[in-house]
Length: 254
Ligand SMILES: C[S@@+](CC[C@H](N)C(=O)[O-])C[C@H]1O[C@@H](n2cnc3c(N)ncnc32)[C@H](O)[C@@H]1O
Image (cartoon, rainbow, N blue to C red):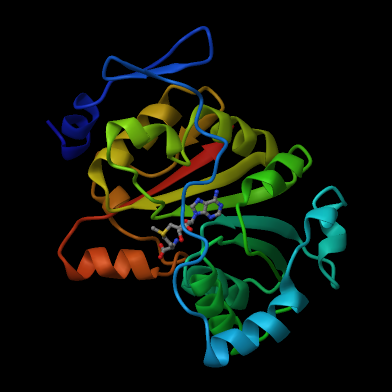
């Protein structure tokens, strides 16, 4: 039996007719609308503070702009729109922006200390194709027009390992419905994680849908190998340095 089949067997996710899900016999609602992560908690000073005051306002996508045509979010015409959920220190966002100057990228991160780190990365090359939300990404995702996005990145999301906290996970039927709605046909939902049980959870949720197909080979080592067009994030590097295997999943919108 492959490693993938073994982890798949450990979790049973049933989608119930009333919109709830049952995970290993326990009933959950459709994800949780409240935001449970950290926003504050670390002092922001020095260069980070300066960037928060002077550079963030230049990049920030305001809630009043969410309902406007995403094409108006950038000063120059962009070929595609990508979004990154929970950018952390912004290594991936900044790398993608630099390597894809014709793509508009919106990144969101509510933990303000990390936003400071992200601004440091971005300030090094001052991209014209990035907008930031220093907050929960979900209201912006909900406002996006149908089929307006070509890629959604969710890299090393909080695993919320306790069963009673599973409903806080970003991968849940409601958020997947939203991602499915906003993605163009052929668009990608990219997911990375070093948390084996969250990987199983994600595969289960996606495999039960008919609107996505998995585009990495699960029978070879491909899903354990980061693609070249996907740079490492801080959380990934932490996992790799501890010898924890990571999963790199790409789901394509059908
Ligand atoms: C474990 S960290 C990973 C950060 C980064 N992607 C990495 O791989 O280094 C997950 C991040 O997702 C952010 N996050 C959680 N829920 C979010 C939401 N609804 N909108 C935007 N960011 C969110 C958290 O604040 C946290 O910084």
